[in-house]
Image (cartoon, rainbow, N blue to C red; front, side, top):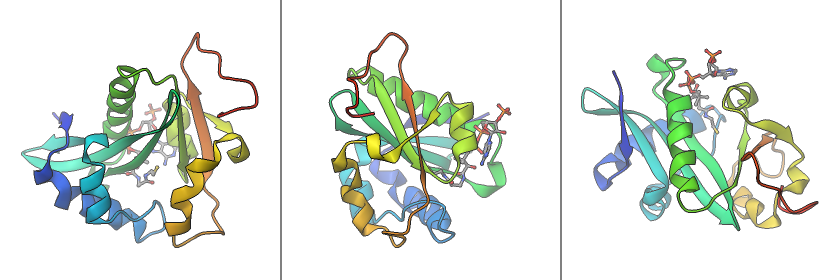
Length: 162
Ligand SMILES: CC(C)(COP(=O)(O)OP(=O)(O)OC[C@H]1O[C@@H](n2cnc3c(N)ncnc32)[C@H](O)[C@@H]1OP(=O)(O)O)[C@@H](O)C(=O)NCCC(=O)NCCS
């Protein structure tokens, strides 16, 4: 019913529209076209009838650590399994390059819990995670929650990273 693939330049306008639709409701960070172009390799899109109806990105942050972000599903298609499928594909792409730990900052902890993430203390994330926060309209009064997923069998360095 839905197709999934890596994003291309042709998808940028649709990704921009989806993310900023939800950013306008303060549900996620706004994304500029420039940021989407520069990070296009991070993105996976979901397609229905040739149209982009969902997107998400995985961004490498530190050693074996990646952030799941910019997840947005067309409002008419939420709760159709698309978000979970995109997260799964993003994780697979990142694991192929050695990622062992994922985190996300979100207002939708329930969704990420369904994807196998658990709540964490924001302070445990590396400081460089916060470099984007200064661009957020809600900075410094942000209530996003941090959730993490550590792959089975991997021992995260104690008190470091996550
Ligand atoms: C959050 C979002 C990405 C979820 O995507 P989705 O395609 O609707 O989610 P799925 O259909 O894959 O849901 C997977 C599971 O999570 C549950 N779920 C979905 N959204 C949820 C939410 N907001 N809270 C709690 N559970 C949720 C579903 O019911 C489903 O559970 P089930 O397996 O028991 O049936 C989507 O609703 C969205 O685009 N929201 C607005 C933008 C946003 O907040 N993005 C997150 C920024 S990081």
